[in-house]
Image (cartoon, rainbow, N blue to C red):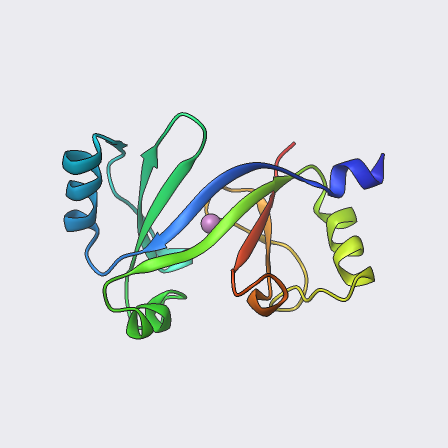
Length: 141
Ligand code: CO
């Protein structure tokens, strides 16, 4: 049971950091024909975000609100923007975290879940453990 709830489920979203969210939204809308939500400002996460809907998942375009934003440094290294993280759903973060620790994978920060941009608990995993990719696990019940 616990094993099952610690395994990854749906790909919830792919997050892409962008220097200009209006410009990026326009391209996704006009060139790709995507449905793009209105921008939302999330001050507690330091970003402005739009959701690009597609049938099986969504892309989140993130623009930093200021220099202290968690994606500001990423954009200094990637001035045109780029893929920042992917987010998988899990049934239970506690058992997922336990399994990660057992295999020696590193949870970023203090290792405890934080409330993510969608109001659910999330953790982020060390990119060097996963082929250079930042992975977010979001608890969906
Ligand atoms: Co995310």
